[in-house]
Image (cartoon, rainbow, N blue to C red; front, side):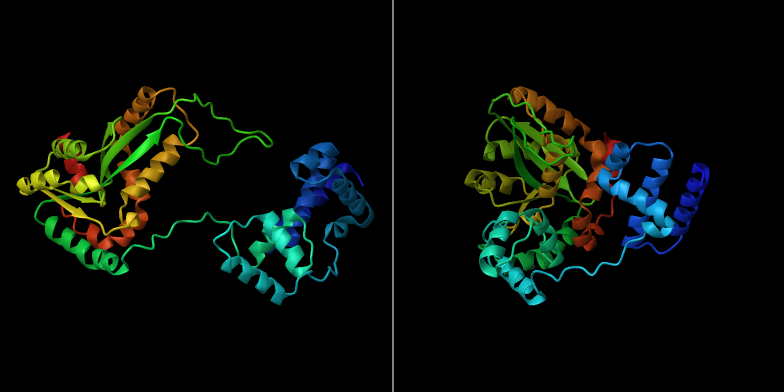
Amino acid sequence: MKTREILSKLKTHLDHLKKQNITPSSVRTMIRIKALIAYYKGSSLDEIARCYDVSEKSVKEWIKRFEKDGLEGLNDEERSGRPPKLPAEKLEELKEIIEKQNQRIWVARHVYVLLVTTFGVVYAVKYIPQLLDRIGLSYNKAVHNLIKKDNEKRRKWIQEKLPEIYSKKVKEGWRIFYQDEVGFQTEGTLGYTWGPKGEKIEIPNYGRHGRMNLIGAFELGTGIFYGVLTSFKVNAMRFRRFICHLKREMRTDKILLICDNARFHKAKWLSQWIETQKAWLVLEFLPAYSPDFNPIERLWRWMKTEFIHNKCWKSKEDLKEYLRDILDKMPSYAQSLKSLMKKENERFEKICEYYEVPYLEQFELAA
């Protein structure tokens, strides 16, 4: 059979498979057909093997089966398969052991030892993640659970206090901001990213230790963020300055800040000053140990992922200039931040409905 006829036959069968219900078996057959098409078009075995991530031996076997049995030779042969090393009940027991001992690190080599010592079976270490996935386990990063948090106070805050704040204050013309502070190191933070196989992604580190703090306020529902940078430790005095800057920048007469329970937020002299400013300023405090109730925490994570991961700076001044440039561009991210807060906006859907004035437009016009 001529090469042109062979190619036509392969392409016709490939089109036929694409129109059928896709199954793992048909996908494997399509890969083999594509590899054969490449072969008969003149590609080398090495190129085909690298393109389809298989060995040259496999490609040679496909060619041999096709030339001997035609298209039928490309289909999967029936395989009896080996019986599983661990029966279902033992796999369930393995799952229970890992779930119960969740305050230790489980990686593939630890599971390998468990399988050998407890069940007397040996699996290839590289196969173990697939085995664990099959029994309903996944590889996750542990998170802290603040055991001191008061669930009843948290419930009252989210179901009663917060809706009351929004329903009353927004209608009276108050703008409500979530407030918090965050720090950025000159060493930056490291995160996962794609890169060349087998090569480390190296980030130049200048060995300089420095920190810049950012005091910020975020308005849920509009996506407006305002922040002030400082190279000094955040205290009550700098917090008061930030409030005054926020009032001037937002061009509003009434501001309500929802804060965490940091000690300087409740400094005696600051509380006395806030009392004298109650005509335009109110502070409300989240329940203790409830950072998950502050949407600005999500914004901090976004900033670090988007702009800070895998970067280092020579000095605090360089870091400050970099962060200042980000803050200057923050108004252009308002819509992105509204999307970023999708979960919060869904959780506080009724709260966001209290926004009767399009503050974002108002802010842009005033600017």
